[in-house]
Image 1 (tube, one colour):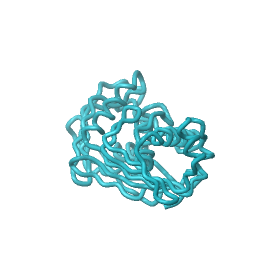
Image 2 (cartoon, rainbow, N blue to C red; image 1 turned 180 degrees about the vertical axis):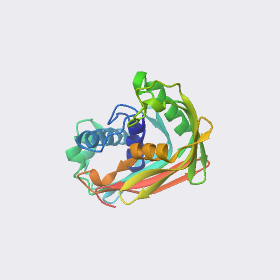
Image 3 (tube, rainbow, N blue to C red; image 1 turned 30 degrees about the vertical axis):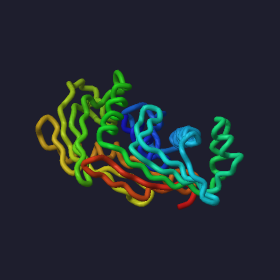
Image 4 (cartoon, one colour; image 1 turned 180 degrees about the horizontal axis):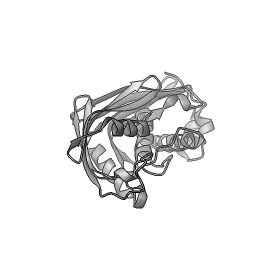
Length: 251
């Protein structure tokens, strides 16, 4: 689930949409490479095709698409805006017809976007992703989110024996209750997570387990691995949800 969610988040803050597709089996992190980039581009293309049917304004050589309380592939966006520079009538028609490839999208001069997501919609998305995972891929259960200023409290149950890199994974274990307060940060081209405080089975998380989990999770996304400029510029967490902005090709 981790990679699936974070690919969607990384795309969402740049493109404003709900993004299907997973760069790795849910729950198993992989370094970014050709497969992850291909997934990013495929889902970015799907969002752009969808946007062609949304309200927009022409402002010189820029076209601004506006999204409010819209749902794409099961993900709901409270509000968002995508500004495309260099969207020619030919590319716009090709996208609207579902014919354009990502090579054509790269002819855009710039893509800027912002999005606001509510806490309730993000919780619904997490529930949906967990429901999709089965068998050995299912690491988390009954995950609940509580948004705080600049942090998120996450609680639920975790299968520690299924965490990648766990040297005791051969010992089957029952799901363990956990609670953690985490924060997200932008470090240059990378989006990373940090664990501010956590408990597993009612006990403070050990430093060894914290290191293992963060090593598995980070970076959540690395824009420097893309073969074109891209950046997540802002990410704000509040008790009501999350807001973010970013760009592709040029700021």
